[in-house]
Length: 122
Image (cartoon, rainbow, N blue to C red; front, side):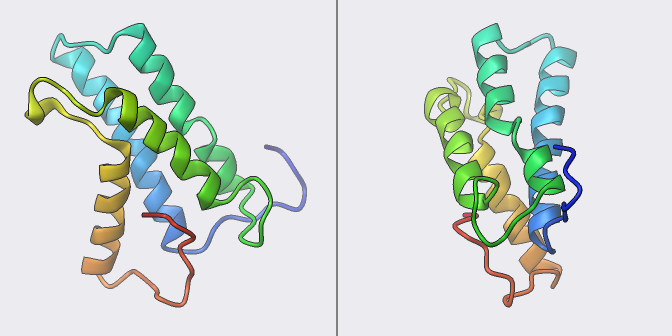
């Protein structure tokens, strides 16, 4: 994560993935606050799903390699596949939904640049 030839991803990719990280952090905090903490297995899977996002953001390489969007999304999907169906749909948390929300927000505010290729971000 501490390489000399690092770069950050262009917008909107940078903001989209920061949004996903923030959403995951807020979900954990809110669940603790509401007295509904995540089971250890779920928390582990959530951290596993998002752990590579900071390195992806700080070591972005839009030309291939491991740290590309195509390799981040499957981890988000894996979490959703296991934990995405909650008994109470108001409590359902989905990393892929948060990713889509971030993309939609960027488009709605005009910050979405169509010239930037979103490699299967959504």
